[in-house]
Amino acid sequence: SSASAVTATSRSPSRASQINRQHDSTSEETTPLEKKDSPGRAKLRSWLHSLMSVVLSDGRTLVGTFMCTDRDTNIILSSCTEHLPHSHTDGEEEARMLGLAMVPGRHVISLSVDERTVNQRHHQLQQQGQQQEQQLQGQQLQQQLQVQGQQLQQQLQQQQQQEEQSAGQAPYIAIGTQVGVAAGGGGMAQALEPPAGYT
Image (cartoon, rainbow, N blue to C red; front, side):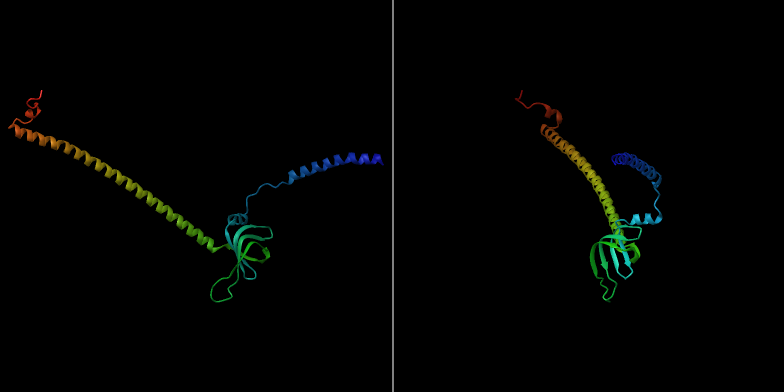
């Protein structure tokens, strides 16, 4: 009995290693190559995290963020709201918050990007375009103001230089004229001589 137990235990590791080897070799053979997405899968991937509208067989519409689907076309929506069919005439739609919802694929009639998402994206793109245009106009206006400011500064500097030159020349001429008149026609030569008694 102990001999048969030894034989059984000695066979187990080798048999287990054979099974592992077979499993390793078959797993390498059956590993599928990565394929490109089919058009349907690509479409589903493009819808990820989009606001989707799902119409059900009983007339209800579920609106929520598309999270995933499976082979049975079950759909998972987050932040989902349920909208009942229009049963009253005032046009107000009653909505009930569901949160995270799994929609059975057999009840799905249609799946589409919600109109509000399309309108929101269009509105967001419009706002971005307007903001970019306003920024561009603001930059252009700022550049124009800078150029005008530089031109005004240059004009002020030129005006100040002209005033300094004319202010510096005018008193000199006036003094020269007064000295010339007081000296009796001697002009500037008289003004340059030191006064009497000053040596």
